[in-house]
Image (tube, rainbow, N blue to C red; front, top):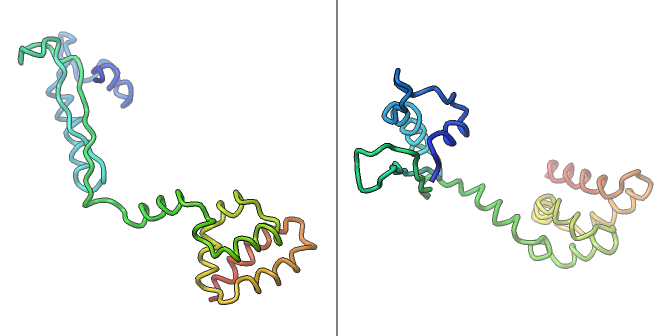
Length: 167
């Protein structure tokens, strides 16, 4: 449950807004001008929306004062972003299981990448694996050229990105 005052505060609505001339809250105005438009906007295109019920001082009396709202999240699968979902799933799986084991070992032990560095750049390595036929050979050439660079690992990653663009 969230109180009306707390909800107004969270939404940045002045405390004196949606009150009548006697200072009583106008729940009907708040609903019409804030909650219903927000719900309609989310219902239209977002994967998540909400339902809500009014919380009353006396729940058994429909005429008692509304003190707040109870919100229920609702998932709308028809609006989910499959590409984003795929990236989220891919991010959860470690690079060790997505990159060829020989490539992974070469990156770790010959190029000196840590498993964290490989995970951070796994999208580049996965794409390189798909587009470059002899990736280990390419990595060997890049590793040799990177030795005189200030940031050899960064240079290898950027060189791979350039080669991916060229393919």
